[in-house]
Amino acid sequence: MHRTGWIMASLLVLLAPAAAGCGSKRDAKPQENPRLAAVRVLDQIVHNHYSDAWGDLHSVDQKVAPLSEYVGCETRSPVIARPRSVKVVSVNTESVGLGDGKFVESTAVDIRMGFAGSFALVHTVHLVAEDGKWKWILPSWRFRDYKADRCPTDSGSSAPPSNA
Image 1: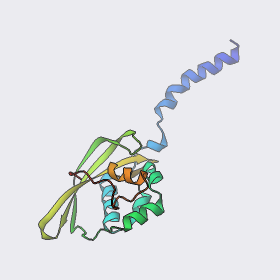
Image 2: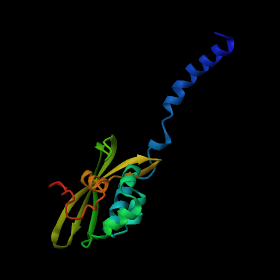
Image 3: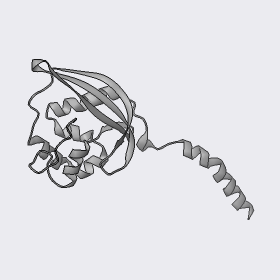
């Protein structure tokens, strides 16, 4: 091997571990508190601000539910019962499947919503780090409907799981 070859090989050996430890910007942990990000997304959806919610949607989900399709479908069944109270009850790390079959680490934010008549429920918003920001993901049954080119609220669409 020529002297230049040895120098290049040596540089590669020295630089490879440093490059491997850098991580990618795509998966960089967001600076924003996941509690605030999850409550913001929930607020966008319960106030029928679907364009804003779509902007915070994970890119894998945006590909199967383009903006005009997502807004059009979600507008067909707007939220009419808005919560009177919203409280984050827990934040956990969970492995979650994206609609494309890839499993990723997510931050699962459980939010308790209180409604009129003393009715309450807890909804989990799954957030995934993407490009240094928190992005929410569609529930798998909604992803399947969008992928099949049908609105999740149309007849013939997938029923949500009984625990959704």
